[in-house]
Amino acid sequence: MRIVEEMVGKEVLDSSAKVIGKVKDVEVDIESQAIESLVLGKGGISEGLGLSKGETIVPYEMVKKIGDKILLKGPEE
Image (cartoon, rainbow, N blue to C red; front, top):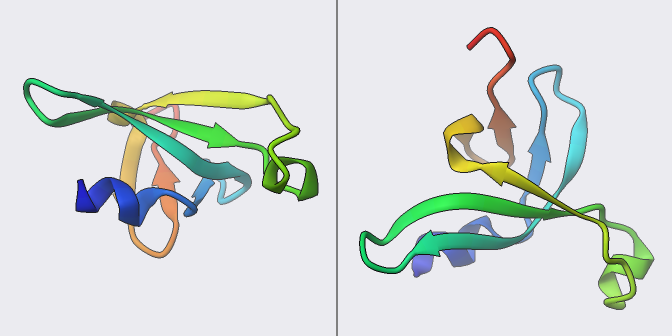
């Protein structure tokens, strides 16, 4: 999916604009072709070499806005 390809590598920011990681992969429901969640890597050299196993799963419902970066909703939203 083209949208998925465009999302991979984008930085993800929490509601206070703090970078929490980069999109490493996107989980998609094959039947509905809807995005279910984002898989975030922590970044850094070890991630680039495939040595880092630290991943964070973010449900797609938490995404507020997608642009050059991906902004997540705050707890009150």
